[in-house]
Image 1: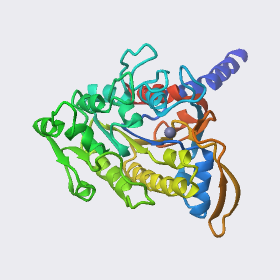
Image 2 (image 1 turned 180 degrees about the vertical axis):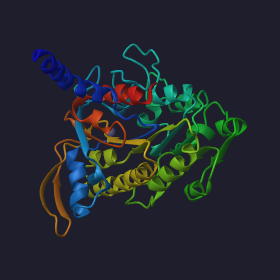
Image 3 (image 1 turned 60 degrees about the vertical axis):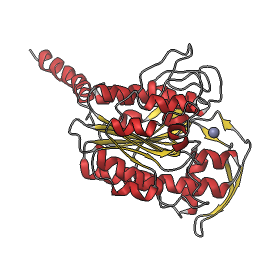
Amino acid sequence: MKIAPLFGLIFLAFQVPAEAQTKVAKPRNIILLIGDGMGVSQIYAGYTVSRGVLNLNQFKSIGFISTHSATDYITDSGAGGTALATGKKTYNGAIGVDADTIPVASILELAEDRNMSTGLVSTSAITHATPASFIAHQASRNNYEQIAADFLKTDIDVFIGGGYNHFAKRSDQVNLLNELRSKGYQVVTRSDSVPLITRGKLAALTAPEHHPSILQGRGNMLPEATSTAIRLLSQNRKGFFLMVEGSQIDWGGHANNADYVVSEMLDFDAAIGKALEFAMADGNTLVIVTADHETGGMSLVGGDLSNGSLTAKFTSADHTGVMVPVFAWGPGASSFQGIQDNTDIFEKMSQLLGL
Ligand SMILES: [Zn+2]
């Protein structure tokens, strides 16, 4: 008679964790921020120059992702973006297609299918590899005009970035801006007009190709575009998916220019701050910050946290194979702890959104 209650207790002890696992909080919205080329050195360079003050400091759920592509130890942004966007490993240079060039659905497209609102923001051309991987399906990342045309095949609600020429000055003479307007988009071509948009669909193509770097005067384009995108997308009660790219951390790495890396890193961190600010007030939003790969083999060989000085060295003018961090905040954030593959980010996001 005394054994039964003991068995009951043991049974209960094993039951509780299992039940707790099935009750993982689920977000209504996901904001995925990708720092292109952002490894831990790039982050700590920003941390040092800002004397330890980063919005990233507020994240508690932290992990790492492997970044190799289907064909190479070292990925490019096409294969890296496609892995994050679709959960499929592919060859370097691919955009939203698998290793056999077959189109694969992205998290953005799956969210659209569920009538969620969707958006893309980048400081590069919006047709560049990382944002393109979430919306286009092309065998090559260099098919910029075809990638622009792929935007018209979706119901994306908001996109803000460069790439005006790929929509309006095309080799086929078609002006996609007119087609966007007829689909109900407000078309904006000046960065300072973006924050004035308060509702509806928005196509903001605010640079002919890429925006200038922070060092060359881009200003607050990225954090402001992030705020505008969140304001527009969050009007949908069914939720939203937004991808924001800090595109040029990568270019600072390619240039082996620490000032370029740090200024882009801090600008990206300001955009992270806008996402966190919304998520903290909203309570139903998961914010994920990660990278597609590291660039430059950057290392910090000297510095001073009291005055924000830094000495950096680079071992490569290209991407490297090291793991990159993933930070998560909000409902479901704990799923992103530990070491995982870049394709797992897609799997976890789609599971949490029930897609
Ligand atoms: Zn790169």
